[in-house]
Length: 146
Image (cartoon, rainbow, N blue to C red; front, side, top):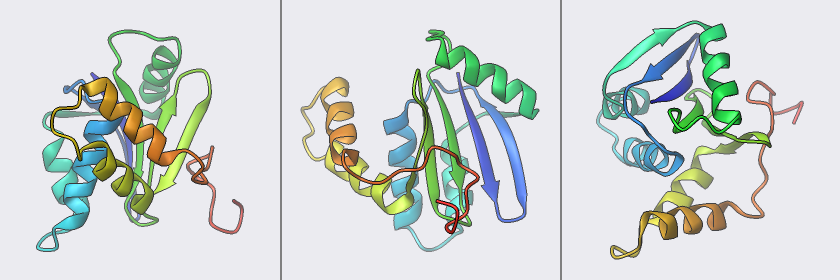
C-alpha cells in the first residue's frame, strides 16, 4: 500500500493506494501522463494508480508516520500538485523532497534507459539524476516563499 496527497487546481485530496507503488513507479506514471497531450495529465496519472480509497488528512499523516518508521506495509508516501507542477515523496528520516515535474520526468527517463537493470539499479539511477537538483522540503510553499 502507498499514500498520495494530490492537488488538482482548487481541489485537494488524500488517498490510500492499494498498489504498493514506489517512487520510481509513480515517477514513470507521471512521465507518461506528461508526455501524452490528448487528456488532462492529472486524469491519465490517476488512472494508472489503480484502486484508490479517499482518506482524511489525519489518516494520511498516520501512513506517513508509519512510512517514516520503516513500516514494511507502506511502500511510499507521495505528493502531486498538478497546478504547480510539483511531485514530492517522503524520504524516511529526512522528510519531504518536492521537485518540479520536469526534474522527476527526466530522472525517470534516465532510470529506465537500460532494460536489463535491476530495480535497485534503476532506483539508484533515479536518485542519482536528482542529485544536485534543487528541491523543497514543504509541499505547500509558494514560488516566492521557496
